[in-house]
Amino acid sequence: MESSSRKNITTVISQFGKRLMGFIRQRVNNDADAEDILQDVWYQLTATVDTEPIEQVSSWLFRVARNKIIDRYRKKKPESLEETLRFENEDGEISFKEILLAENNNPETEYLRNLFWKELQDALDELPAEQRNVFVWNELEDIPFKKIAEQTGEQVNTLISRKRYAVLHLRERLQTLYFEIINH
Image (cartoon, rainbow, N blue to C red; front, side, top):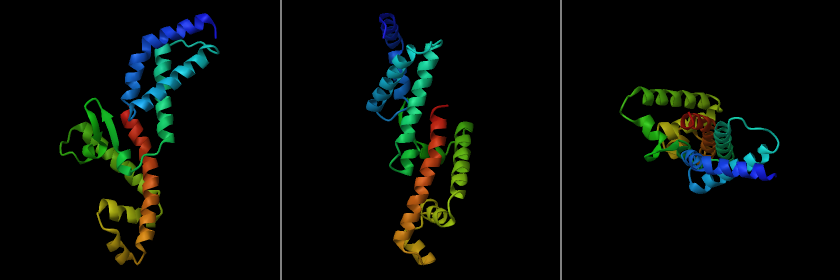
């Protein structure tokens, strides 16, 4: 790498480092992930600056950061469906579930609520009937597995397995909605 390239990169890092880190921190769960993503952005900058000119450095940096954040979330699966429905804002962590069940009916909350239920219904429609039914009965209608087993004649373990497959599918499908909402 040439001396002038190093100087330019140092200037870019000092000029955009804090803003870029703030941007990334707002969109990831912890500082370690934010630092890793920022390091990936700087690495990509050093690899790119020698091969092609970057006209709008600020736009390029934030676009790369957004792409790195999305890539990281695609690789990292949340531990539960409820974790998928969480996001963080300036005031701290807020559950997407709280928005969906909020009693205030402002237009934004109503829009998010309608969008979520539509996406959930579409994702449920993609499931085999056995998985969909178990998920709906247990999660949405709050029917215990034991009672579902009595009604259907299926083993509890079979029902738990079917629900697990449904949750995995829903988690993947709702992840896209989650990222669209927090990155809009």
